[in-house]
View 1 (cartoon, rainbow, N blue to C red):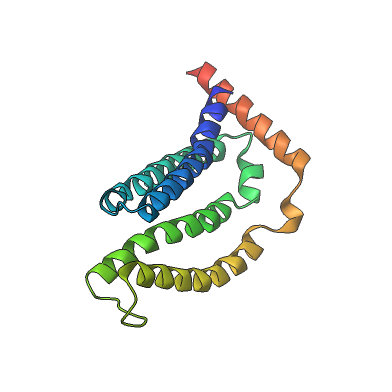
View 2 (cartoon, rainbow, N blue to C red; view 1 turned 45 degrees about the horizontal axis):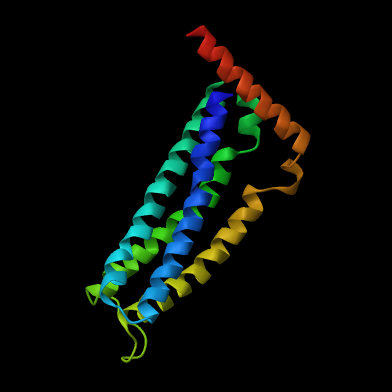
Length: 178
């Protein structure tokens, strides 16, 4: 139970951090509107670093849960039957691409490798427009992938509860054995 609780906290902290990042972004935007342009640009990195660290920690916990559940003899068959790796890659692919493409497009715009749009656009507008366009294209791909990764007939809440209970008991048994 401690393992599941720890993994759950590791994953759910991402939701808390993302709300904190949202508040920070709003406050930084208000600060910029009120007139002081020097600090918000420097502080803008803080929410991105928080998001990156939180995302990494959540991914680590999900991968840890995947490996422990896959290695447990009592849960392996049921766990692998739902194709968890495909689901994981499908969801995390969306997060990975949306986060890192903003970073890469920002570098490409700042080094003048990428310069679409009217000449009057600022770097921030070019980055936002490019990332939004890429997101639209990517979401078509991810939407189709979701159709195959999340089959409607796989969802059974009672079976999910049973599998999670088995995973907890398997983890407890392996801790007592060592």
